Image 1 (cartoon, helix red, strand yellow):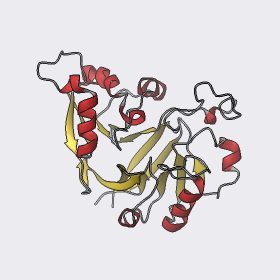
Image 2: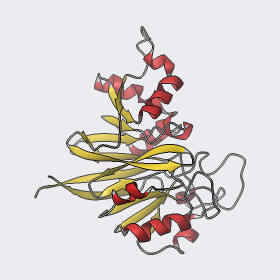
Image 3: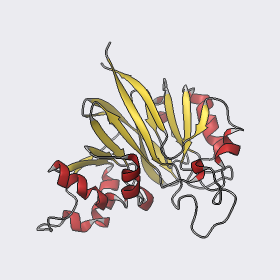
Length: 262
């Protein structure tokens, strides 16, 4: 059976306000460890010349420059909170270079919120210097994306719905306080799993390190990376307390997984 390589690059591993946090002088925000500098949460997926984003954060322009992203073929949105969508306008240079629209995928609720937030993009007779995008609604069903089967994974973010995404043996879940039982069954047999792990102290809309470790024990992925990390967690100190197969994600980190065809 033929295999393809899926490469994931972490564009941002931080929480909604980023790390360092404005006006904060705690040990993590003042850290000299570059892994403690965390832009807002997003990843970049590449396979067979394709380039796909998961979310467009307010930091997207800098993230794209830092990672040397030169093409965007599609964007998968997890949900419509500001730290995940507000960089959408910065896809315009890709429209200009690629001379075409970029499809964006998300739940109807997410796409409707993006349409309201970026109303100027969708207005009839809008000016030419706006992002050119095409809405593609995601449900719980698997869909094809440039030859890869993508499984949306429904998770709870407080009272809100967030979609994570699984491609082959890799799954990326961010902004979750709970993973429903039906979704847990969709996460078996993973090689790589990304999970929200905001901090140790409980939070109403995010998972903690301890809660996410329980999911790791339940699911048994070969490698797990925690993301959406606040300034409560110092990278080196936190990793020293984690199991060997669980690490903290950091900006610029790259992970590769082989995806079997068929």
